[in-house]
Amino acid sequence: MPSRPSEQGEDRNRPPSQDWTDEQYRAFGAELDALHAEVTASLGPGDVAYVERVRGISRLAEVLGRALIHASIDPVTWFAGVVALWSHHQLEAIEIGHSALHGAWDQMPGAEKFHSSRFRWDTPVAEAAWKKEHNVLHHQYTNIVGRDPDLTYGPLRVSEDTRWIRYHLVQLGQFFWTAPVFLWMIALHATGLTDLLHPSKDPTYAPVLPDRSPRAILDALSATVKKAVPYALREFVFWPALAGPFCWKVLGGNVLADVMRNVYSCATIYAGHFGDRLEYRAREFRPRGRGRWYRMQIEAAHDYAVPSAVSLLCGALDHQIEHHLFPKLPPNRLREIAPRIEAICRRYGVRYTRDTWGGNLSAALKRFARMSLPPRAALA
Image (cartoon, rainbow, N blue to C red; front, side, top):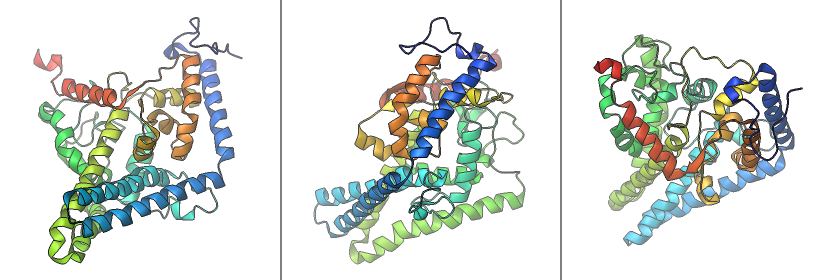
């Protein structure tokens, strides 16, 4: 058996994780596997009750929000309705929807409505496309250049190993001009339509489209339209039309609630995925064994500290490390196991990064700015 590190912190005699032997990697992987098995065995009615409570809060927020937006006679009441409707959208998309599409409640009796095969979330993003792009490609190849499509979000560049193109000069602005429509951009990204913004045949770019044939592009466009258009018609046509001459008030409220959800989700996701303290690996990298795969996931994400209510609206993605380790666990369990994951990482000398939300987001934007410049070799 390999030597175990001290319970009081990193073992100074233990080599850095990149220098571990296969046996040490197996020990690390086995400990995380054991934790996952323990938590999985305890899943059950309590977790179903949890997601039902969140759904109840979400539905109440929707009813309250739509009623206040429709019936408001002053800006304060109207804005209170907008905040309530945003809360509904946020809970449905992140705390419930994101986890459901990962299969968090698939094996739990009584949670059939949240099963990943039939769940439909309150966003313009096509479920099947999201599950392929996000669950399969991103989570399998996290931060591997040329394999993880979330390293690019269209033409974004966050690693030195990604080929620089002229668009990257203005990529810092991409955060600011796409944040208000973030989930609409994700709708295009998930089906692969943003691939068309990047030069073809670039091995450092991870495409979502299987190819750029007219058939593949039309299939992606069709999947995007079938999900995004009904969402847009419901939020920006149906509900405003019910208000008759006050349709402008409802349209404005619904648009603002949608924008708030997009900006909040964008800040949530960028803060967990990008920054200088994360590892970005070359296309050739292959994690051999569970221990190496776990370390790849841990060192490819940040956590950040927020109050419980804020974490609820983040869908537990403030625990991005735990989510990447065990993406099928419900969000309430990710919060529960975070201290244990951190303790294991500290003992084994694996880098576990956590900062404030603002600190992480600032680090991500600074990296975007630096990666926007052409490589020095190109300037020589």
